Every structure is written in structure tokens, then in C-alpha cells.
Length: 237
Image 1: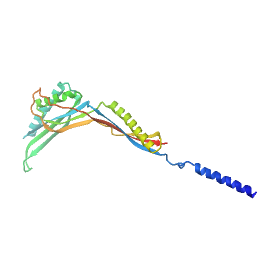
Image 2 (image 1 turned 90 degrees about the vertical axis):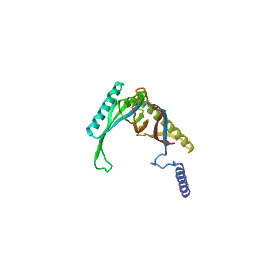
Image 3 (image 1 turned 30 degrees about the vertical axis):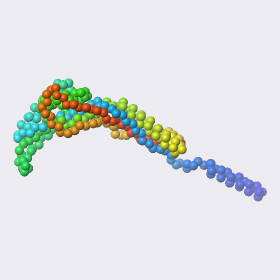
């Protein structure tokens, strides 16, 4: 009876020991192992839209005279741009300023300066040089900037997101294999909230000299880079 009891105890101990050694290494309820990677893709693209900002700055001893002179030029510029085939919807005022100018002692007003700017949206980039030349002929005296951008690039962006995900997954697979594991299902994908924009700006206050109609300023749009970044989390097996 005593011998039988000892045998039963030995069998029970063996079962407990076996259970302990066969338990999974990951404790129950703990988080599964994951790997975090970043996927990136980029593409050189040409712009499809430009924003040209042209202005007129006039200074006269009388504020009204400065404003009238400025109005004449800017009204003529707007009419000329529309005659070139540009829609009125693509021409807008982006800044109108009138300010006094003081003498060297900063006490007395000696003149007034009026500044007015028109921003012109252009989809035919070959027209930019003609627009600048036309501005000079009607009396505008400043080009305040040319900004190139891509406004019809949705398909490019969608393709870049797909490519970024593929690149991220490839990186994750390489890392998992190097760690002696295997890549599992995707847990989470985050696409950058800031949509990438192709934008190249030529800025500065450039004085326009009176130009002949056939004298075009060379403007090269060039290319720039569209890119997409995604953050990805995968389970490890």
C-alpha cells in the first residue's frame, strides 16, 4: 500500500514536470511580438501648374495720385491677361498696400507708396514668359514670385503609396529573417497625413523693365520629387 502510494506520487510529479517543460515560452495574455518599419517611395515629376505673382509699386507725393497710377496699370494688366486667354477666375489680387514715406528724420510724410499684386494661375507653362513680358509692356514693375506645383497628381500619389507599402513589407521580411523569425500578418499601416506636394518657388522682388512684346524671359519649370511615406507594423511568427 505504501509502495503503491509512492508510485502514484512519482507519476504525478512526472506529469507536472512534463507540463512545465511543454508550456509555451510566451506567457498567457502577453502581447505578441511585432516589428515596426517605414516604407518610402519617390518619383521625379514635372509640374502641371504655375502661380505667377506680378505687381505694381507706385510712389507719388499725393496718395490719391499714387493709387490712380497703380490702378491704371493693374487694370490694364488684368485685361491684357484675359485677352491672352486666361480665365478671370485664375486671376486674383493677393495684396494691396498703401503706406506713407517719411523724411530722414521720420517726422514728415514726403510721399505715398501703393503696391498691388495679382496672382495668375497658369496651366500652360509655356505662357509664363509671355505673361511676364506682357506685364512689362503695360507698366507692371515687379515679379514677386513664380511657384510651380502639381495639382493633377492623385494617380501618382496612389501609386507611390502602393510602392511604399511594398518597400516597407520587403524591409520587414528581411529584418524578420535576420532575427530568425518569419513575418506574419500586418497589424497597422499609417500613411503620412501631410500629402506630399511638388512645389518649387522662384521668389524675390524683381523689377520689370519696359520690354518689347517679343522679348520673353526664359523660365524653366524643371522637375521635383513627389514622395510618400508609410509606417507599418507586422506580427512576427
